[in-house]
Image 1 (cartoon, one colour):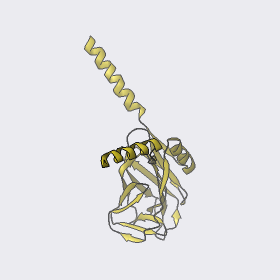
Image 2 (image 1 turned 135 degrees about the vertical axis):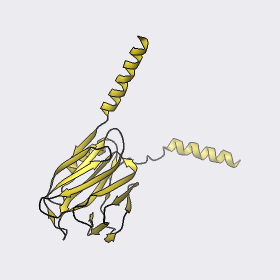
Image 3 (image 1 turned 45 degrees about the horizontal axis):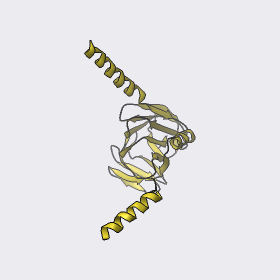
Length: 199
């Protein structure tokens, strides 16, 4: 009987802890940014302005201490700060190191000339969570905040019935925790320790 009570108590703890982890989805950049700030993080932006032309897989970069890596079948292409798969109707995968608790982007579909076209955008996280919606311009936003497991990757697709479409990102945003400045007392303690070591 005692073992059954212990097993039941452990089951409640496991169910309770897994039920509390969640991924919140956003379609509004301002609301996402407000919640990132409430969580005590700052927003770091990758605007892709330092890239231009065709890139073989993977394309990597860093924003706010988050290293991202992007891949797509056929490679990637960047023009005027717009990042897209080089081939039409191809998914783009972003991996993050370390994983992030908050990520979002201005994600939409374009035609072959980088003109925004209304298309269905799907963004899927590594845990299978996803957001599906229509996007029609570079201001379209999809974002996520996790209160449990870090987000290690996203896969982005864009589709439009009867048309070729290129999945495109204008910006990626990350919630990053600022490194706290050392407290003055800690600096004094470190100075005293170093002074003692010299003697």
